[in-house]
Image (tube, rainbow, N blue to C red; front, top):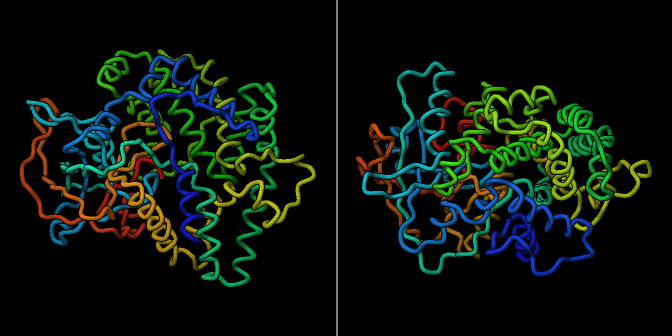
Length: 464
């Protein structure tokens, strides 16, 4: 892939958060362009917390000149100190040191509510699940001197938009598989899509034609399809998390909104209430609560939410995300009963969906798990190249400004310091010991991350 192609793909994989949600012009050749603008307006103007999509603590920190302070949580400080190196991990931030914002105050550093949840609830729950008693989660404070040339335009990587990138990378690395393995892989992903055509056609009808579909049968069909199309579990989760954070009117959500933060505890608590084994081991392909279970979970985490409204919203939102993230840009799929169920034929209208399916399938496919590290490393190299071109020092999760932010490990001559931190009774963090650590531009092997093994040298992203 030449630089121009990679540049365009990675530019399209980022969400650019400008000063306004309403675009200056709409591409009328794209059937979803008007809808995209309508969704931006609807989310920002018709939800209690929509203003936080553009004005929030994360963006204020990224826009500011001077020093940027971030929290990173680890279980393996002794090993990291011994090596003197901290490696990034893959996932929703592609290849970053996974962090959350810190706010400097006279009483110490105040954690963003996302970081507070990871440090005080999620990480301890993971260790307890493993029966580990000789380690505790350790907070690290990173202080980054933001270079004057750093990009101020707020470009966040959206992992739901990586489908075409996954497909392109596989096209370069597919000869690591034998002919029979390549054939089997193609037949497997095509079969998954063919047997999911009912849901895909339904979502397309809602997104492109405005079809009215009742929430309960739609969500049931979605849940039944997720085992075949695991990426739908990620879309489902993100849509539910988005709804909760934007619509919550609880006291906690209002208090956090005053601080410029979306309430991450809502979806975290919902996820672990329904799937307690996911603490530290996110596998959102398993996120598939049925309609009644979803309503109960939502009511459990936030009684202020109207579950009936939420279900109706999810039909529209998930249908739009399926069309915008899994279908080829600018093209509405043709009549589904005319579809040629062959890999090369599907690569044009459904290339992003094929890419997402291949990326996941390769984790367990034949001999490919031995090469999977290089697939993600290849992807990380492209991301780092794009970020360095754009002078992005701290990439963030662009699906929504939740507070998930990383450190670009490949940024040239990045000036940073790192401390082991201690937490006081008020929950503030204080630097306790400066550490001599180097951030290395090399992914930690997936088998050593929190998501895949009991050992880790870098925390896994909250979604991956």
